[in-house]
Length: 371
Image 1 (cartoon, rainbow, N blue to C red):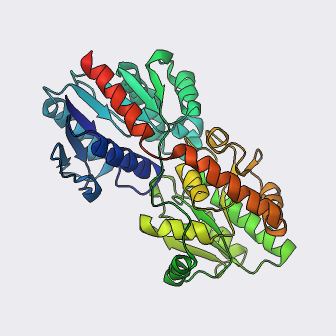
Image 2 (cartoon, rainbow, N blue to C red):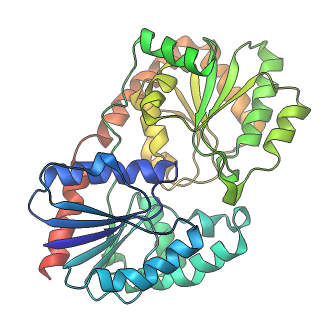
Image 3 (tube, rainbow, N blue to C red):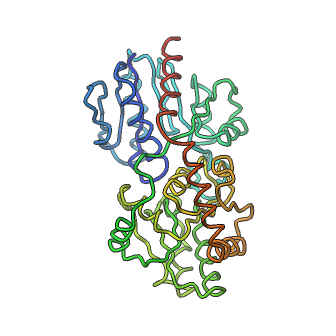
């Protein structure tokens, strides 16, 4: 088969990029028979494989708006003669004659429209709805996202396939030397509380900062709060930095910015606890990565988090300051609980390893391509 994959925009840091690249790397290693043409915003060296059946085509524009226009006008012609087209990160185009698959990571834009620009909300309510109604199949990364698709778009259930993403093999417990090296690199003290992910309103980091301040007052905690990730300007948290200044935490909160993916396992491994107080998650790949590295986890149960994490973390049904503080105190003062969370997390992460998602995706390709 000749399979085209549209993966424009996966160069942006975040779980969507990580999950997509993990899938592609496993898929292309597994399948040396089919011919792949993959559309990207920038070259991805990890997708260069020796079998020669994968071609990368880089879009000539970078601006988000112009990129979508380029895709709409260019892709239908570029994929003529292909047996299947997979839109790998939510958005699609119209006018493709081959069977199409769309992967949906989450519907946060509709679940929390207050967090996004009005145009994005309009797009997801109208254009995205038609994209999914036209698709021959939809891959969702959780049952929760599948339920959201049924709720907001009324797509026939039989078109939806739930395929959980897998985390990369390098996410595992780091050695003490590796942890010390990373701490030196980012000037992080021995004791720290961690969050990994984009800095945006969905991640609810202002509440985490307020909880951190209260936790310090109640326990005399001397460690730092470390926030790893770049700011997401489309949904910028405008009150995060003023809150830090108001609470006089400028020297207690460390912003690393975006870090190489290879540095993240040691950051997880060295953390006293990792906290994810997000308002919504379509899956929560960073949660799984943290567990795979042996970090105890505190997380909101929003979106698909409970589905993915199960009983392997302290889950918060109410994402407020007091709930986070109480969970932090439990982790710090109960070493047996902390060890149990590590054990459960490592066991739970094992369920999201390997080539399982790639094999499921390839079976769907074969099914649609044969039709």
